[in-house]
Length: 506
Ligand code: AMP
Image (cartoon, rainbow, N blue to C red; front, side, top):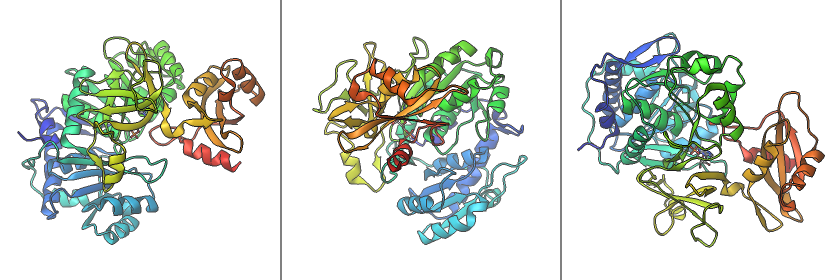
């Protein structure tokens, strides 16, 4: 049995390879045969480079069907894929390239100068370029070199535990770590999600996420591949384009910001969604308000799920059954999720503690960091996610925050999410982020950063006084800042490290 992930996808291709695999926003069509041939050519090119077995292929490229083919060709040829955020600049790229030591780096032509300099210095053997898709044509040395290669390729034999990809964590504290994911980690996760979300014949995925992150690559693109389904591929999220394409799609996956943006577009309504079957949210917390507004506007209930680069998907609200706002649902089949308190004991329902997980999708360790890997696993093999949360009495998981965001004020634990939820209910508040700042007396002082809705105003005094009547005094923010928007990364996560830095300086 070949455990190569591409082999699994191949077994799921539609019977007619001339069916559409991928359609771009400027109406370029790629068939499944194009996918098979395109990946064969790139796989042949990579194989002709005489790379050591298990070499890593790093890619910092704009989103395009060819970029997805590069990923699939890497897997097909038995190499390890390392996607890199297109926003990374020289010092970040220098770190990743030196840490992962990729044998091949693929970058956009406009970055070739500085990327190749870094890569060759770090010992990379080949640097290719791949341009973004322009009027149906990608340029760059990767495709021009691959063009001369054969369009057939025998997918390389792999074992389940062989490495498929390295995903660097966003590293908001300390060094970014490379999570090593095996063929089996990725295959088992997508097989589970395929069944759990009831992918159906005729489904069409509207793909608006980036390809360098687990969400766009291993949840969205893998889902369509596993179902032999067509993708409508947007180079980036744009609410007008999404609204236009939703009419022809049945599955959409997004980060919460996408849903907020769709709701703020007056053209977004029930009529756009008549063909839609499933809206999925993840990568950051979906506000209950967004969840409810979405149902009122479209008649659809967003399905929220939870996972991370190190573990792929862990929990999901059910496809059939109740999807609860503010929760990330139930543990997926085969995944064991437990919550532990500081003494290491299992928490009761509704008791907040550290989320630990075990299952076939949990990664094999951090690249080049055996000690860090050992620290993050318990003696009985559970991975410490670093997220804090609790189960309700129905077994639904809620995430309260990251353990590193926990505030300890005057010796008491303060969970930011609890305070944020209270602030978000105040009139006129759009959203908030609560952080701890160094404080001489308390150790850390609870501090709120609040975004108001358009034309609405509140004073610091009103926020503080209202909260004093609702929550224990030690949880009430000592200071409240009002801002136009919260700093977020591309996956919609609020960057609390930036807020802490900004307001510590103030
Ligand atoms: P990443 O590795 O970039 O996917 O980030 C994983 C982290 O994102 C998790 O550890 C959580 O802190 C957060 N996350 C992912 N999905 C959700 C969700 N549905 N709700 C809240 N936080 C989430």
